[in-house]
Image (tube, rainbow, N blue to C red; front, side, top):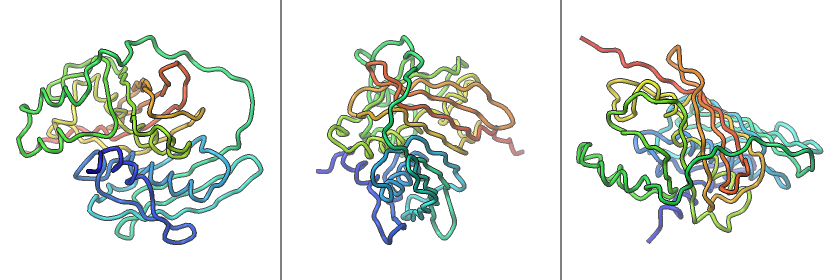
Length: 290
């Protein structure tokens, strides 16, 4: 029987159709009604990686243009914008039903030595002793309609343990800081490129939720707020292995004009900063109709 982790690894392995044309699976990510944003970013990065030989991605910048349809495959068109002595640049367009759903630029860098400095990892409780998200969902499934139970409770490939998790159904307003530990044990032994692809997928988890925290909002109240990721930027600082625990520490410095700005830093459990993230998302009040 296929495991959720094996399904995710298969989901993020795109098929080459032509020299710079690739196809990815639409269904099977975090959300059943539209394609999870992290999935499209990760597949776009996987497509770009198939056109780069000897260097790892150090940054990517993506815009979400339309909601993805999980019932259809996604076509990725890669433009080999530049192959330089130290840096390689790729542009990727994700297409469904003849229309772009995402555009992304990614830059790849040879391994070079330089000066080292980083902010320290926040002093927060470690993952040991924290309740897994799967247990929290099992305890709260009775609060949602039974027709949603299967998706709500299905096993996920990435283990998440939140620090001070909120009530997902009627949260109180709280600070915008948002910490969680995450890992995928089946990532052990995967290539450095796949580690980046998995981290790109996971970097879209919980990030936009930082903008909801100060307002006591939740995705489980679609009658209150409409949310969607608008763009996503990810910087890879150093190679890592996602089978180890990583701390994702997030905050939202600004919410306004129906948008929320979110930032994140991803640390390995030993304190090494491996990636930084920024994202703006739609946080639109639902207008009441009479």
